[in-house]
Amino acid sequence: MNFETLEFEVKDNIGILSISRPNALNALNAKVINELGLFFESLDATVQCLILTGSGEKAFVAGADIKEMASIEKNAGEAFAKRGQTVFQLIENSPIPVIAAVNGFALGGGLELAMACDFIIASQNAKFGLPEVSLGLIPGLGGTQRLSRYIGKAKARLMVTTGDIYSAQKAYDWGLVAEVVEAEELKEKCLEMAASITKRSPLAVRLAKKSVTDGFELSQDDGMQLEAQLFGEAFASEDKVEGVNAFIEKRKPNFTGK
Ligand code: CAA
Image (cartoon, rainbow, N blue to C red; front, side):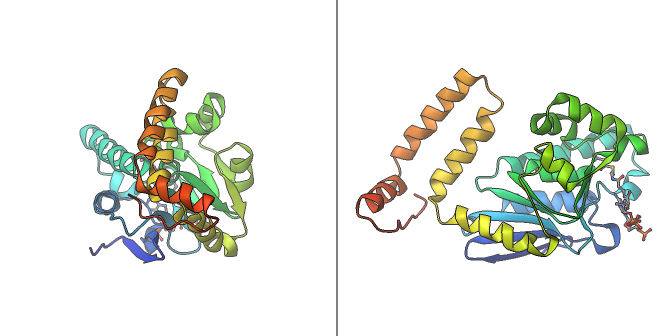
């Protein structure tokens, strides 16, 4: 599939998807959101882990496209938020892990996109914030909901009401970012993490992600039930037979994802 605003490469079952709007710091316009939706709907099993990043050195994504939003009114604004939220949910619920490799500004919709991924790895020069209030707006792509789940309600309210921008180190201290690395090591670090994932059972990885993601929104009792059910599903897989036998036979497993 050919995209105007996305670049994609895949090697050794690891995909790298870059958002590419060089003249707008990769800002999310309706086209990017639609292309992201199409991309995640058409992902096939050859990709077992995806790294999502922004093209160029300066930005992951500098937010929703402010110039496009200039002409949008109430109903179109709500529709933009709903469409974007649906696409970001596709990312959050994708059967494969998605690593956000944040290589510069992750502001507004950019931070919202990164938070829809499984975890965020940031370069030292990355900057994080939800500055929408300085435009007379609020975050509309899940930011007010996901941020408090990452860093707690008080710090989320601090970020959305001040609109201030934070360093990668602060984002790490607050638990928004899983790891901070030198800018030139970001791609290599994410590839290393992706490789740790792709050598495991794809089926078990999918079930483990689902158990954490879906369980997080449930009570602990309901989450335990979900976990037990998914644990049972793993027992019905060929990967479980292969993984357990490989351990007993002291060899490397050869997983098929079935
Ligand atoms: N939308 C559209 N264009 C953008 C953009 C955005 N979010 N961010 C940057 N650009 C454009 C700039 O207009 C500029 O284009 P021109 O050369 O044609 O003028 C180009 O990208 C380079 O940007 P700057 O010259 O501003 O670069 P800088 O280094 O001086 O500043 C920045 C970088 C601090 C990130 C600054 O660009 C900025 O503040 N961007 C906006 C950040 C923002 O407010 N994001 C939130 C958007 S609202 C949102 O996301 C709502 C939501 O939840 C859905």
